Image 1 (cartoon, rainbow, N blue to C red):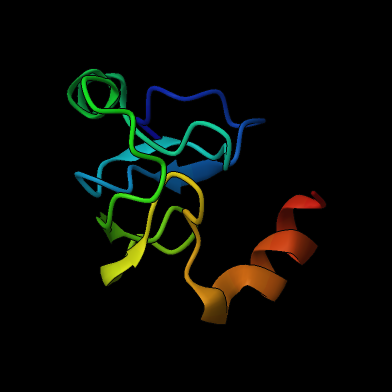
Image 2 (spheres, rainbow, N blue to C red):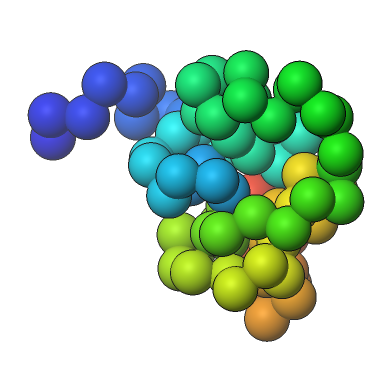
Length: 81
């Protein structure tokens, strides 16, 4: 399908840039966004996108809460975490 990710790895979205990245709630940022974020390391800093859906989060996501509340149950069911 042209994506650079292994099809066994579910797709998530960077909470800062919205780019497709491997789904991992413990690492919800692209490496570039993480470098920028890590200078301050504020896990509650308001971010722009939902790691699960990719939709704009209007500051309702953070490294601590990368998935919008309305998608949490679905994300848990889909990814079994």
